[in-house]
Each structure stands twice: as structure tokens, then as C-alpha cells.
Length: 229
Ligand code: MN
Image (cartoon, rainbow, N blue to C red; front, side, top):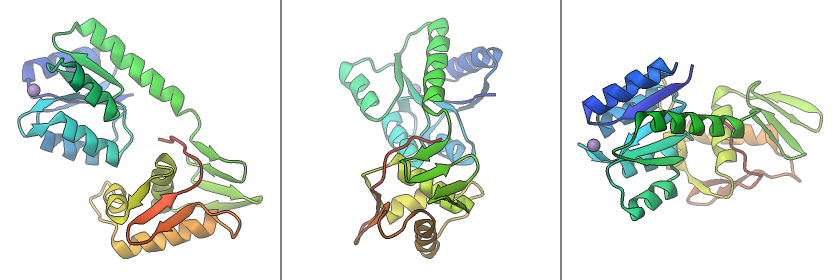
């Protein structure tokens, strides 16, 4: 069952939307502030987030940026801000759709379904394969030079973050934030270094480098990009 988070401080609106989506077969959680949304996103894996822009404790744009840095979750803005520049800003922040109030529930429902379908297609087969290195994210397995290596759960999470952010410098701080596990245990600086080195030993050899150290900053994935869930 697809899980949707609605972040909206207008309770009447979020109750109505939630009722409608649940009748369609989705599981829906609702929160009414940016703080509650952050907590929910850390604790639960959602398939889609519907996000209001004017929230009592901050801007939905800020929240969107925070969410997208942490996890790659499809996101729809739902807002009274119908200025073109706001819509553009929403898309620039990585939103998958932007719906302005007032809107019809029937159209909302179809746009939710469309975003979920589109994102599902992009995620067919959780596999990274560049011809040399093959990573099967469902099996937590790496294959290179006809040898198979198993990934630990931290290496697996690290690998997903790297391939989704190819060519970008990931600071140690960002990596630590993203690796913060669901039980609330922090991965510390030392554990990060150990995990990066262990992952390297499984995926790299002298002729094939994937994780570049950017001195004083962090790391960068120099292999191909891949959007795995
Ligand atoms: Mn609002």
C-alpha cells in the first residue's frame, strides 16, 4: 500500500484530502507543521509527500529542501501561492508537481496517481550497472570481475546516496545526516570513514575508482548516476 504524508496546517483541508485518498486505497498520515513533518520523514518511509508552503513554523520551500537532501521522495506542493515565481521555485527545489488552491479533489487525486506512477517507472529494478560494476540494491549484493560481495546495511545506504548524487561533493556532515538511521542512532565520523573504506574495497580496484576523496570537504561519486529508491 502506498504511503502518503500530507503536511498542511488547514485541518479541514487535510482531513478532507486524507479521507479521499484513503478511500482510494492509500495509507495517509497528516501533520500540520514543519517540525512534525521532519519527525515523520525521519521515522517513516513515504512514497509521496504533499506539502503546503505557508506553515506555522516555517516555509514549505525550506522543508522541501531539507527533505530532498535527506531522501529522494516524490513531492507535490499544495499552495495558495500562485505566483509564477513560486511555482518555478517549487520545481527548482525538485517538486514533482505544483497544485494551487482552490483545486478540485478529483484533479488532486489524479495528479497524485500520476506522480506515483511516474516515479514507480523510474525505479524499476533497483540495480546500478555500468558494465564493470553491478550493484543489486534488493539483494544487497555487488558483483565485479565475476566476484560477488555482500553489502552491510550502512554500506548499502551509503552506496545509494552516492549513486543518486553522482558528480556532487557530499560533505561529511551531509553524509552523516543522511545516514542517521531510523532507530535514531547517529553514525559517527569514525564509522563513516570505516564504511566508506569498506565500500571502496568492495567496489573499486586500482583501475576503477568510484569514490573520490575531496580533501577538507568530503567525498564524490565519480561513477554513473542512478536513481535507486
Ligand atoms: Mn498553510
